[in-house]
Image 1 (tube, rainbow, N blue to C red):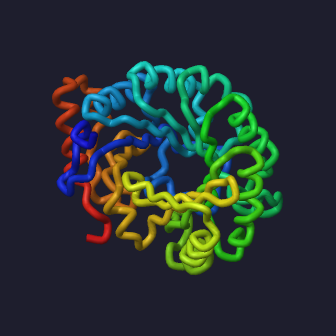
Image 2 (tube, rainbow, N blue to C red):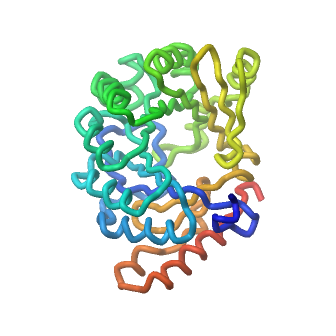
Length: 309
Protein backbone atom coordinates (compact mmCIF):
# COMPACT_ATOMS: atom_id res chain seq x y z
CA UNK A 1 0.00 0.00 0.00
CA UNK A 2 2.76 2.46 0.94
CA UNK A 3 4.30 2.06 -2.51
CA UNK A 4 1.40 4.19 -3.79
CA UNK A 5 2.71 7.28 -1.97
CA UNK A 6 5.62 9.58 -2.67
CA UNK A 7 8.03 9.43 0.27
CA UNK A 8 10.46 11.89 1.81
CA UNK A 9 14.15 11.11 2.28
CA UNK A 10 13.34 9.49 5.64
CA UNK A 11 10.94 7.04 3.94
CA UNK A 12 7.85 8.71 5.44
CA UNK A 13 4.91 8.52 3.01
CA UNK A 14 3.04 11.76 2.19
CA UNK A 15 -0.55 10.72 2.73
CA UNK A 16 -2.28 14.01 3.52
CA UNK A 17 -2.07 17.70 2.63
CA UNK A 18 -3.29 20.43 4.98
CA UNK A 19 -4.05 23.74 3.28
CA UNK A 20 -4.57 26.98 5.17
CA UNK A 21 -7.06 28.73 2.90
CA UNK A 22 -7.34 31.95 4.93
CA UNK A 23 -5.73 33.72 7.86
CA UNK A 24 -8.95 35.61 8.61
CA UNK A 25 -10.94 34.56 11.64
CA UNK A 26 -14.02 35.64 13.60
CA UNK A 27 -12.36 34.97 16.96
CA UNK A 28 -8.92 35.77 18.36
CA UNK A 29 -7.89 32.78 20.45
CA UNK A 30 -5.10 33.55 22.86
CA UNK A 31 -2.99 30.58 21.70
CA UNK A 32 -3.45 30.97 17.93
CA UNK A 33 -0.12 30.61 16.12
CA UNK A 34 -1.28 30.84 12.46
CA UNK A 35 1.03 27.88 11.74
CA UNK A 36 3.84 30.26 12.63
CA UNK A 37 3.15 32.45 9.59
CA UNK A 38 2.88 36.23 9.39
CA UNK A 39 -0.77 37.14 8.99
CA UNK A 40 -1.87 38.19 5.51
CA UNK A 41 -5.21 38.93 3.87
CA UNK A 42 -4.02 37.64 0.51
CA UNK A 43 -5.73 34.36 -0.29
CA UNK A 44 -5.44 31.70 -2.95
CA UNK A 45 -8.41 31.43 -5.31
CA UNK A 46 -10.61 28.36 -5.62
CA UNK A 47 -8.95 27.54 -8.96
CA UNK A 48 -5.47 27.88 -7.47
CA UNK A 49 -6.43 25.58 -4.62
CA UNK A 50 -7.77 23.12 -7.18
CA UNK A 51 -4.42 23.19 -9.02
CA UNK A 52 -2.49 22.53 -5.81
CA UNK A 53 -4.73 19.60 -4.97
CA UNK A 54 -4.48 18.25 -8.51
CA UNK A 55 -0.67 18.10 -8.22
CA UNK A 56 -0.96 16.52 -4.78
CA UNK A 57 -3.32 13.86 -6.14
CA UNK A 58 -0.85 13.13 -8.93
CA UNK A 59 1.80 12.45 -6.28
CA UNK A 60 -0.42 10.01 -4.42
CA UNK A 61 -1.83 12.22 -1.65
CA UNK A 62 -5.12 10.69 -0.52
CA UNK A 63 -6.41 13.16 2.04
CA UNK A 64 -6.99 16.92 2.03
CA UNK A 65 -7.64 19.04 5.12
CA UNK A 66 -8.77 22.66 4.82
CA UNK A 67 -7.99 25.00 7.69
CA UNK A 68 -7.53 28.64 8.63
CA UNK A 69 -7.96 31.09 10.30
CA UNK A 70 -11.59 30.17 9.95
CA UNK A 71 -12.24 28.55 6.55
CA UNK A 72 -16.00 29.20 6.71
CA UNK A 73 -15.33 32.94 6.49
CA UNK A 74 -14.64 32.41 2.80
CA UNK A 75 -17.75 33.02 0.70
CA UNK A 76 -16.57 30.44 -1.85
CA UNK A 77 -15.98 27.65 0.67
CA UNK A 78 -18.61 25.32 -0.83
CA UNK A 79 -17.16 25.89 -4.31
CA UNK A 80 -13.67 25.10 -2.99
CA UNK A 81 -14.86 21.80 -1.54
CA UNK A 82 -16.74 20.93 -4.76
CA UNK A 83 -13.64 21.53 -6.90
CA UNK A 84 -11.39 19.46 -4.64
CA UNK A 85 -13.98 16.69 -4.43
CA UNK A 86 -14.02 16.40 -8.22
CA UNK A 87 -10.42 15.10 -8.05
CA UNK A 88 -11.46 11.92 -6.26
CA UNK A 89 -9.64 12.09 -2.94
CA UNK A 90 -10.25 9.38 -0.36
CA UNK A 91 -11.00 11.96 2.33
CA UNK A 92 -11.69 15.71 2.50
CA UNK A 93 -11.89 17.25 5.94
CA UNK A 94 -11.91 20.68 7.54
CA UNK A 95 -10.94 22.35 10.80
CA UNK A 96 -13.36 25.06 11.95
CA UNK A 97 -14.36 26.88 15.11
CA UNK A 98 -17.97 25.91 14.41
CA UNK A 99 -19.46 29.40 14.69
CA UNK A 100 -20.75 29.46 11.08
CA UNK A 101 -21.13 25.71 10.76
CA UNK A 102 -24.87 25.52 11.35
CA UNK A 103 -25.32 27.61 8.19
CA UNK A 104 -22.85 25.69 6.01
CA UNK A 105 -22.90 22.09 7.27
CA UNK A 106 -25.44 20.70 4.80
CA UNK A 107 -23.92 22.53 1.82
CA UNK A 108 -20.46 21.27 2.72
CA UNK A 109 -21.72 17.72 3.07
CA UNK A 110 -23.46 17.92 -0.31
CA UNK A 111 -20.29 19.38 -1.89
CA UNK A 112 -18.22 16.40 -0.77
CA UNK A 113 -16.79 17.24 2.65
CA UNK A 114 -16.42 13.97 4.54
CA UNK A 115 -15.79 15.10 8.10
CA UNK A 116 -14.92 18.04 10.29
CA UNK A 117 -12.85 18.91 13.34
CA UNK A 118 -14.21 21.72 15.50
CA UNK A 119 -12.01 23.69 17.86
CA UNK A 120 -13.80 23.90 21.20
CA UNK A 121 -11.68 24.16 24.33
CA UNK A 122 -14.43 24.52 26.92
CA UNK A 123 -18.16 24.28 27.54
CA UNK A 124 -17.96 27.08 30.09
CA UNK A 125 -19.11 30.44 28.72
CA UNK A 126 -16.72 32.60 30.76
CA UNK A 127 -13.76 30.40 29.86
CA UNK A 128 -14.79 30.41 26.21
CA UNK A 129 -14.87 34.22 26.17
CA UNK A 130 -11.47 34.35 27.88
CA UNK A 131 -9.91 32.06 25.26
CA UNK A 132 -11.60 33.44 22.13
CA UNK A 133 -12.36 37.04 23.22
CA UNK A 134 -15.87 36.50 21.80
CA UNK A 135 -19.29 35.30 22.98
CA UNK A 136 -20.02 32.65 20.34
CA UNK A 137 -20.21 29.49 22.46
CA UNK A 138 -23.86 28.72 21.69
CA UNK A 139 -23.34 29.30 17.96
CA UNK A 140 -20.36 26.95 18.02
CA UNK A 141 -22.33 24.24 19.84
CA UNK A 142 -25.24 24.62 17.40
CA UNK A 143 -22.82 24.24 14.49
CA UNK A 144 -21.29 21.13 16.02
CA UNK A 145 -24.66 19.46 16.52
CA UNK A 146 -25.68 20.37 12.96
CA UNK A 147 -22.51 18.73 11.64
CA UNK A 148 -23.44 15.55 13.51
CA UNK A 149 -26.98 15.75 12.13
CA UNK A 150 -25.93 16.02 8.48
CA UNK A 151 -23.37 13.22 8.78
CA UNK A 152 -19.98 14.93 8.69
CA UNK A 153 -18.67 11.87 10.48
CA UNK A 154 -16.73 11.59 12.60
CA UNK A 155 -17.06 15.03 14.10
CA UNK A 156 -13.96 15.61 16.20
CA UNK A 157 -13.68 18.19 18.94
CA UNK A 158 -10.21 19.74 19.16
CA UNK A 159 -9.56 20.70 22.77
CA UNK A 160 -6.29 22.54 23.42
CA UNK A 161 -5.35 21.91 27.04
CA UNK A 162 -4.10 24.96 28.98
CA UNK A 163 -2.79 25.10 32.51
CA UNK A 164 -5.14 26.70 35.04
CA UNK A 165 -7.73 27.30 32.32
CA UNK A 166 -9.32 24.05 31.18
CA UNK A 167 -7.19 21.08 32.22
CA UNK A 168 -9.91 20.06 34.65
CA UNK A 169 -12.66 20.10 32.01
CA UNK A 170 -11.61 17.01 30.05
CA UNK A 171 -14.22 14.77 31.69
CA UNK A 172 -17.08 17.19 30.93
CA UNK A 173 -15.96 17.56 27.31
CA UNK A 174 -15.62 13.79 26.94
CA UNK A 175 -19.18 13.28 28.19
CA UNK A 176 -20.44 15.94 25.75
CA UNK A 177 -18.66 14.17 22.89
CA UNK A 178 -19.80 10.71 23.90
CA UNK A 179 -23.44 11.80 24.22
CA UNK A 180 -23.36 13.24 20.70
CA UNK A 181 -21.34 10.48 18.99
CA UNK A 182 -18.22 12.60 18.57
CA UNK A 183 -14.50 12.02 19.11
CA UNK A 184 -12.57 14.14 21.60
CA UNK A 185 -9.08 15.15 20.51
CA UNK A 186 -6.82 16.53 23.24
CA UNK A 187 -4.08 18.79 21.87
CA UNK A 188 -0.93 19.88 23.65
CA UNK A 189 -0.41 23.61 23.46
CA UNK A 190 2.42 24.83 21.25
CA UNK A 191 4.01 28.27 21.38
CA UNK A 192 2.06 31.23 20.02
CA UNK A 193 3.14 34.12 17.83
CA UNK A 194 0.59 36.31 19.64
CA UNK A 195 2.68 36.94 22.73
CA UNK A 196 6.08 36.46 24.33
CA UNK A 197 6.83 32.77 23.80
CA UNK A 198 8.62 32.12 27.09
CA UNK A 199 5.96 33.82 29.18
CA UNK A 200 3.16 32.22 27.18
CA UNK A 201 4.56 28.73 27.61
CA UNK A 202 5.23 29.24 31.31
CA UNK A 203 1.72 30.57 31.90
CA UNK A 204 -0.36 28.13 29.88
CA UNK A 205 1.60 25.10 28.66
CA UNK A 206 0.35 21.86 30.19
CA UNK A 207 2.12 18.61 29.42
CA UNK A 208 -0.31 15.83 28.62
CA UNK A 209 1.76 13.05 30.20
CA UNK A 210 -0.38 12.70 33.33
CA UNK A 211 -3.65 12.86 31.39
CA UNK A 212 -2.42 10.25 28.94
CA UNK A 213 -1.22 7.98 31.73
CA UNK A 214 -4.66 8.19 33.31
CA UNK A 215 -6.35 7.43 29.98
CA UNK A 216 -4.13 4.38 29.52
CA UNK A 217 -5.16 3.12 32.95
CA UNK A 218 -8.89 3.33 32.32
CA UNK A 219 -9.10 2.62 28.58
CA UNK A 220 -10.92 -0.46 27.31
CA UNK A 221 -8.60 -0.45 24.28
CA UNK A 222 -5.76 1.66 22.84
CA UNK A 223 -4.94 2.12 19.17
CA UNK A 224 -1.81 3.80 17.79
CA UNK A 225 -2.26 5.70 14.52
CA UNK A 226 1.13 4.99 13.03
CA UNK A 227 0.83 7.29 10.03
CA UNK A 228 -0.82 10.09 11.96
CA UNK A 229 2.29 11.06 13.95
CA UNK A 230 1.98 7.99 16.14
CA UNK A 231 -1.02 9.43 17.98
CA UNK A 232 -2.81 7.19 20.44
CA UNK A 233 -6.56 6.77 20.52
CA UNK A 234 -8.17 5.61 23.76
CA UNK A 235 -11.52 3.84 23.76
CA UNK A 236 -13.32 4.41 27.06
CA UNK A 237 -16.86 3.38 27.99
CA UNK A 238 -18.16 3.72 24.43
CA UNK A 239 -16.32 6.98 23.70
CA UNK A 240 -13.04 7.90 21.99
CA UNK A 241 -10.23 10.24 23.05
CA UNK A 242 -7.27 10.92 20.78
CA UNK A 243 -4.13 12.67 22.06
CA UNK A 244 -1.99 15.00 19.92
CA UNK A 245 1.42 15.86 21.38
CA UNK A 246 3.64 17.77 18.94
CA UNK A 247 5.87 19.34 21.63
CA UNK A 248 9.16 17.57 22.44
CA UNK A 249 7.82 14.42 20.85
CA UNK A 250 10.16 12.62 18.47
CA UNK A 251 7.47 9.99 17.77
CA UNK A 252 5.21 12.75 16.40
CA UNK A 253 7.83 13.82 13.85
CA UNK A 254 9.07 10.32 13.03
CA UNK A 255 5.57 9.24 12.01
CA UNK A 256 4.40 12.43 10.32
CA UNK A 257 2.77 11.82 6.92
CA UNK A 258 1.40 15.32 6.35
CA UNK A 259 2.57 18.20 4.15
CA UNK A 260 1.17 21.72 4.57
CA UNK A 261 0.41 24.73 2.40
CA UNK A 262 0.59 28.18 4.02
CA UNK A 263 -2.13 30.80 3.40
CA UNK A 264 0.22 32.71 1.09
CA UNK A 265 0.86 29.64 -1.04
CA UNK A 266 4.13 28.18 0.19
CA UNK A 267 4.84 24.52 0.84
CA UNK A 268 5.47 24.05 4.56
CA UNK A 269 7.28 20.74 5.05
CA UNK A 270 7.21 20.67 8.87
CA UNK A 271 4.66 21.83 11.44
CA UNK A 272 7.14 23.34 13.89
CA UNK A 273 9.56 24.90 11.38
CA UNK A 274 9.39 27.92 9.08
CA UNK A 275 12.97 27.96 7.80
CA UNK A 276 12.46 25.44 5.01
CA UNK A 277 9.41 26.76 3.12
CA UNK A 278 9.17 26.37 -0.66
CA UNK A 279 7.47 29.00 -2.84
CA UNK A 280 4.63 27.56 -4.92
CA UNK A 281 1.79 29.98 -5.66
CA UNK A 282 3.85 32.42 -7.76
CA UNK A 283 4.74 29.54 -10.08
CA UNK A 284 1.07 28.66 -10.46
CA UNK A 285 0.21 32.28 -11.21
CA UNK A 286 3.02 32.42 -13.75
CA UNK A 287 1.32 29.59 -15.65
CA UNK A 288 4.06 27.02 -15.22
CA UNK A 289 3.35 23.48 -16.37
CA UNK A 290 2.09 20.67 -14.17
CA UNK A 291 5.46 18.99 -14.64
CA UNK A 292 7.29 22.02 -13.22
CA UNK A 293 4.80 22.38 -10.36
CA UNK A 294 5.25 18.70 -9.53
CA UNK A 295 9.01 19.22 -9.27
CA UNK A 296 8.44 22.12 -6.88
CA UNK A 297 6.16 19.95 -4.76
CA UNK A 298 8.85 17.27 -4.62
CA UNK A 299 11.39 19.92 -3.54
CA UNK A 300 9.11 20.72 -0.62
CA UNK A 301 8.79 17.05 0.28
CA UNK A 302 12.58 16.68 0.16
CA UNK A 303 12.88 19.55 2.67
CA UNK A 304 11.12 17.51 5.34
CA UNK A 305 13.27 16.66 8.36
CA UNK A 306 12.51 15.45 11.88
CA UNK A 307 12.13 18.59 13.98
CA UNK A 308 14.52 17.45 16.70
CA UNK A 309 17.28 16.43 14.32
